[in-house]
Length: 540
Image (tube, rainbow, N blue to C red; front, side, top):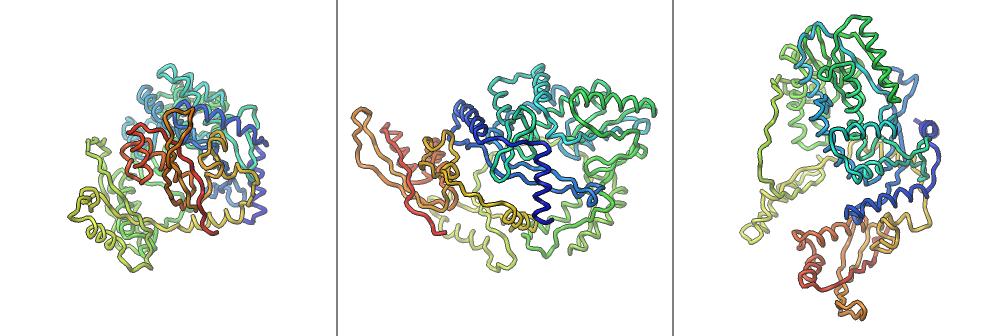
């Protein structure tokens, strides 16, 4: 797609739902988030709003493609408060699921379990619905109704609600200029938000409670924006049910598409059949099956396990060995074309609930060198040999041995990542800001920055001066200070966080000579202050 055409699609996607905002509005939201972070005592670990330009992906799986191109607008700009909101929502969702006994599915296996429990399948039919543009369609009114419904069963404190609501105040950026939703509120659920999926699931539980008025709860389920039910009735009865469901979604200000009176239905990656009471793997007719080639630049542990992983997945999606054998030829041919000689075999899965065992967690250090076939040196073997050479039969062997240090190769960027990086280089305009705000994202601005407004500098050598002060602050007499010199290949702020972590937690006191000195002062109750400065920078 040419750059001009891409920019046109992007502009159309943004201007249809968003209008221009101001930097001042972003600052107001940052100040609110700062207060929340201070109340939780994590202000030094929460950055300001992440300003990243929006982009879109083309929905090339739609039947109308390529004659009619539909886009999915993605917004990588997000608030770090969303990480806290995500944890709160996960706990609330699980509690609500247990209380309401709702079928809020996480994956295909849970849908299959639900299907297997259904009785008299032949006398029922499928009722399938899809919520149109679910994420951006979740309004503040709908969310407030959801929270009010949840409070009938569980407690949600004002602080928790404030955190969730602050994470919903969202901006979209294009060329680093802020945009906001066209409605009067900043409320938004962008795709890509830290807690976007959890908001979607919580609202989904509320929708299921409304649908339970017309469809029994046990016969109904939802996966994000896709719903499936098994219902009983004649054609006219199902048409009346269809109208009732349309009315429920209309009252929630949501649009929905519905397919009813079906004996066969594809849902996620499974094709269900009520007449035969079976299910099997589903893929679109024009979808080509592709697997990574056996000779591709991947670690052997991955290529070796691939046929077994495919067998297990197809077995999970097949109700019997007969169905498995009918569906596997296309997949078998695909792995043959990828260079594998293994045969796909059926593995019976009873979907038994796993009983978690209390096992002692081990502290393991992972070494992850990038894997490349052109490297003939056995990096892993040499690395473990060095561990044996330097730590065996020493006092440190207890902490550094083959049981506490493991090796696992990481993959090099795939073609999709390479293309994505290339596109960003072409599309993203380099906007240089003269003010210091581009070099600092600390809460409270430069006044709270440890590096005086330059905490986002990278590839630098920094200096930390630990100045010991007298207990009496009025005299302000200092004794000789100690200096620590460090180096950061990434941003200073990332390195600074590691330092502050070792200052707060005694178990990390031996991480650096600086942390050792700080803990020595803490134990002796000697007051001190640390001044951070840049000692040098790597040449660009």
